[in-house]
Image 1 (cartoon, rainbow, N blue to C red):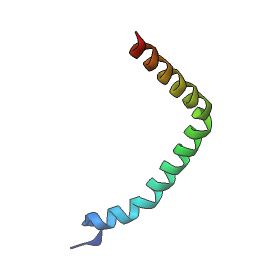
Image 2 (cartoon, one colour):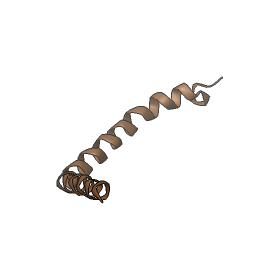
Image 3 (tube, rainbow, N blue to C red):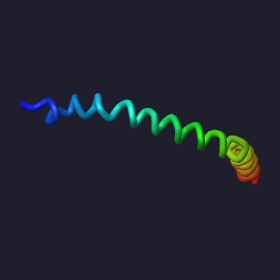
Image 4 (spheres, helix red, strand yellow):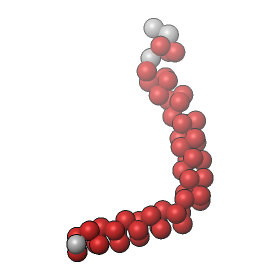
Length: 54
């Protein structure tokens, strides 16, 4: 069997670039959405408290 046909070969070959892509996307999303996420989380907690009190 050719090594290119085994799923282990593809898992090993793709794990490094996929990890690099995931890391770069996560870093850019974190830097862009850090403040927005804090605002959204605070708004969600506040809205939930208001709904519970009503």
